[in-house]
Image 1 (cartoon, one colour):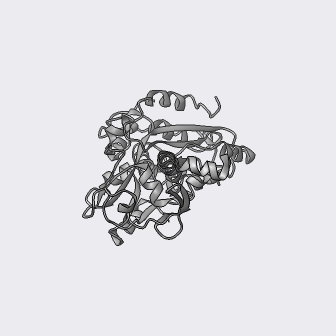
Image 2 (image 1 turned 90 degrees about the vertical axis):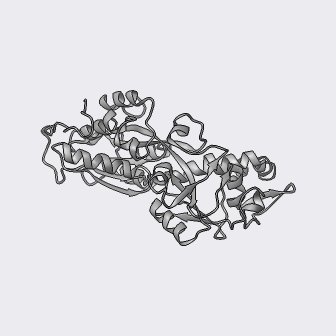
Image 3 (image 1 turned 135 degrees about the vertical axis):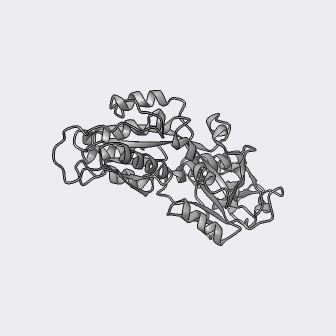
Length: 341
């Protein structure tokens, strides 16, 4: 399917004949990172096609996928948005509930950034800094000890003399998993702590200790979306939050961003792979609903069209890093290619 450029009227398409249903709109839930992109697409889809505007809700990647896997039928959601790939265990849960046909759609890339109050100190971080700041256990003088650090300058004298106060995504968010792998686990390796943990705790428990975070209030899980993190920083100028790049770029009047491993996060540094903390974004389509939920196929096609997800589209304008392999994704969606095919 081809689409005209945004700003030029998109020809409305009549919905294909479908069985009568209790609902005639697409239901979507999941990642708070993908939420603004899905909202933009849903609104434009409702305005320019002969279908009802899709209902888009947040809740986190894990929660959205759990809802998606509850079963097949009009009482279940049609699409799960996710800031990480579905796990094998989640695919198995879906299958156990009859959700056997799933389309995985990669929409582009986003960076995870570390930002603080615009009027505060500037930071230049490494993954090791964040591991040493937030891990429950750290290695000091060769000994594994409870984390004693209360100030960033205690971790690295080049960092500001500022209390450690981090607001990080809660465990239901896909962003949390990427943060754990690309920042905390990487920092554990880089600092040498992983080697010490494995030597003391074994091959199984040692790596787990890397991502066991302190619970003394220095690290605070945020179960809401990025707006809650932003409000926490507004209330505590010492706070440093974990955000998606697009959210930061839309709040540069309130936030300043830190470098990570010497690289400033940007669309360009993420697209090039130079910025170390980035991840692909997805949505998952319940293919068993394609024939019964009006507009579901057209919505998926529209989302990954050049006009939406391309480098000159509105999603890129909001902060999405366009996928250099977008044409392959478009073909997979047009063919209704399922996971495992």
